[in-house]
Length: 135
Image 1 (cartoon, one colour):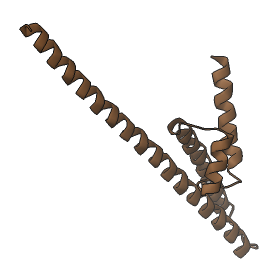
Image 2 (cartoon, helix red, strand yellow; image 1 turned 45 degrees about the horizontal axis):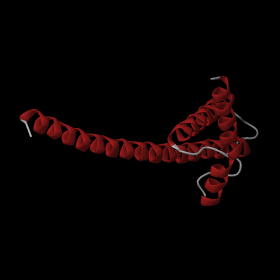
Image 3 (spheres, rainbow, N blue to C red; image 1 turned 90 degrees about the vertical axis):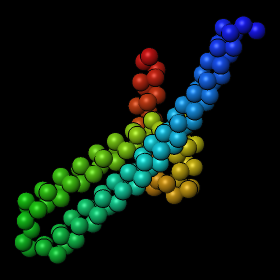
Image 4 (cartoon, rainbow, N blue to C red; image 1 turned 180 degrees about the vertical axis):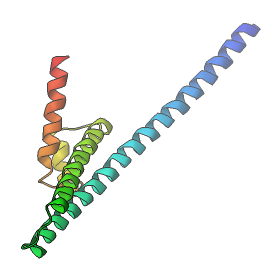
């Protein structure tokens, strides 16, 4: 064997080791992104529920003297939280390998999503299917 063959073989082995390392790092990053997307979704749902409960309690306790500015802020907060939920669903769509009806049912059974939120997930799946058909 000549020196060129030995160097080439060494570089090939180093390249394979590096490719394996990068693949492993990529899988770890994808898992991290998936976990973060689900965490943010959970917290966004908590915020939305908190704002809705606060608005309901405010309306009940201040029936006679409702401050429209406070209700406006609560309504804006609710709208922003709904947008955040939709964006996190989009992040989940990008992070999950399957994003279809069977996945939604699994997530409902596992308690990851509520039956009420399934419509938002279905809406994102339809948008995804439409964009794939156009390509």
